[in-house]
Length: 91
Image (cartoon, rainbow, N blue to C red):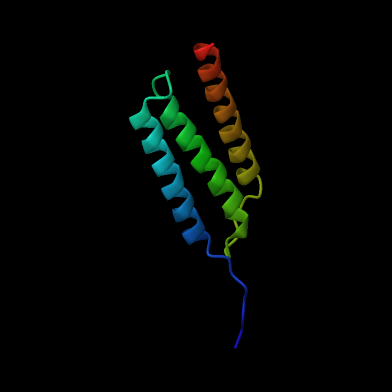
């Protein structure tokens, strides 16, 4: 027998998607964000960041080690830009 310690990344990703979706639903129904499309951009960037954090924990490894950091940086920048636009419009 070969035993291996595994992290249930698919389950964690599903739970994160559920939390992001419910939070997004609450924000949309509450009409909190004044900028059109901002809720989608924030939810998508947040999901991308969560996915990039979970990818290194998977049992199968990526072929290119550069894609995870590049995607995480791009998603983080998108998140910062959208939040900055929301704050600038709300001020």
